[in-house]
Length: 235
Image (cartoon, rainbow, N blue to C red):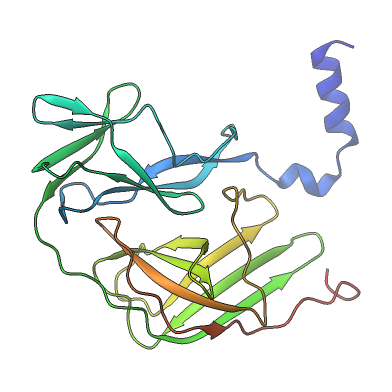
């Protein structure tokens, strides 16, 4: 069967609801702000974020072995340090004073200077809630409600198990928010490999990632609130 005819048959047989779901993938994005000052033991943070009509290749999109650091007149390979599923630190060498991150086409995609930076304390959690829905438009979300606003130096929040193993993460796009999304799944959305959904009744911890890619101490262990959806009544 010719490829075009096969494609037309697939489209004709697909459920109508699926036609509304755009093709989604993941792409790497530098989360450390351009021009930021990072700690000497840090680097640039790269996350796997949503991408429309993008291919979903094998492996973690945040891990790009072809990316390099431009350090003055020399180019070096960064040390890649996994922070969470789909979240990676591109660590600078210890003697770096400033650096540019360049992609495999040698385009500059991030730049930092190096200097002393304060560390972040452990998140103080008020509650963690899970909400979900089955049916034609399934979703699941885990929201962390803090006892106060997120610290200015944090660029991501990571949900981990009770022993601190990362499970999922979310960006902190707006400063000063006290409610943050640490897990977000929908019918059309793709999540990084090894991402784990924190469900009601599970005991988890939370920590910050700062612009340097450093982890804060863990929060107190918190039980996720919420209830599982009823498959007989949810639509």
